[in-house]
Length: 232
Ligand code: FPP
Image (cartoon, rainbow, N blue to C red; front, side, top):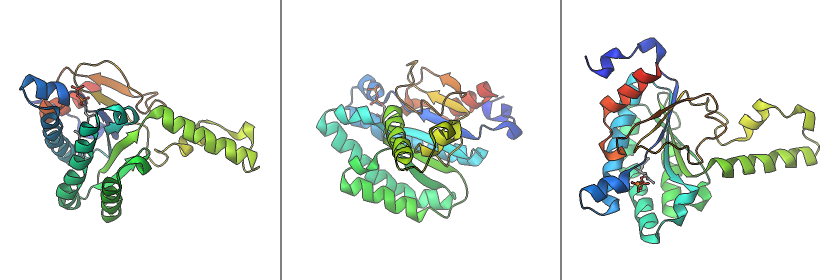
């Protein structure tokens, strides 16, 4: 019996977050440039997104570009930004067809204009879709997000709009970029690294963590179902 058949339909994790790691290593193993790994990684994104939507997962959050990723060589950053624009252009009809709503978390003001505008347009176009919420973390890091939230909370206190003693878990959650999103139930990280890498530090407090040696470009739907069965 495959893993898909073992999934209990009434216990699907509501929110799955994924650290998609290993694109570069996958490409290197084939003797190819790193960008081939990222392009193949996009194919995996397509398959896993459709699989999540079909299962009835409500939120799928993908770590596509971290704040630290800005430090990569300029050619790789530029090529990744172009790949993101091309992917959104190509995949918007798929999102519409599958009733998927796109959202981003992170400091998207740092993105090149073309990438920024493409995401904003796709977010707008898919805003009435009621199925899976696909959340792409772009120029995101948890520490950036916590600093930004702290500044806003301090500002509200300074202006007299909030009392220090009223600050609680809900307050902090509501100031994070994930304010409208429930915390992840399951975090998947590919490529064998056993780290969180500055991803959703506050939100992952109670999540199940699932690590696999599989590199992201070779991560299949069956691997995804395996992670869900393991979670259940
Ligand atoms: C990690 O592999 C992957 C990334 C930094 C980028 C992932 C981005 C995509 C797959 C494109 C996503 C597209 C959409 C629309 C969500 P790595 O380069 O760190 O691999 P390595 O650790 O083997 O070097």
